[in-house]
Amino acid sequence: MNKKLEKMIKMDTQFIDIPVADLLPHKPPMVLVDKVICYREDFIHTRLSIHKDVPFFAQQGVPAYIAIEYMAQTVGVWNGLIRRQQDKEVAIGFLLGTRKLTLEIPTFLRGATLDIYGCPKYSDGEIACFECWVEIDNQRVAHAILNVFQPQNGSDFLAQQ
Image (cartoon, rainbow, N blue to C red; front, side, top):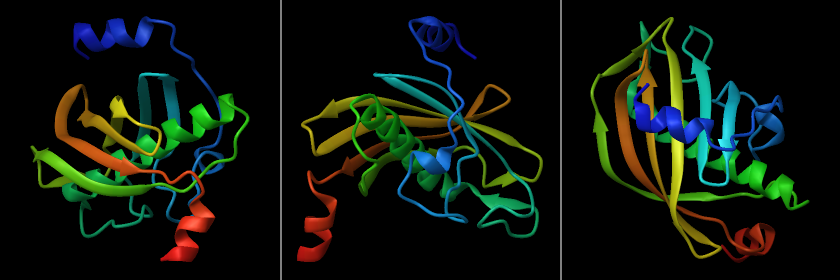
């Protein structure tokens, strides 16, 4: 882990033991992230292990492009934690787009442990932008900027669609 990230994690970070499924509007088996490692208002770190029973596993592992969903769910977990602090319900959000996606490997191999990080860069209350990345053994293997949308009232928004 790089020095800047180590310093960021040590600053006023909360370590928690809340099931990820309680922080996302998803239901198994589509809860893809295993656990929250730590978070702050400006940072989230989640983790998952690749094994033959995870969704999207094929042959020897999971295609690296699934990192987009791992990062999106990490952002969703961050949002769920922030909403809990505000005594609000977990709410649905939408991935609007991904920019600057880089994948350093083609597959997340069976047995790998993925550390997924996210940092909010902009938010206007409904639209937000996050810098996210995935590491395996302290080596960055994926990186992207995610643009997300969370309507003020998700039920009303979905009913209008």
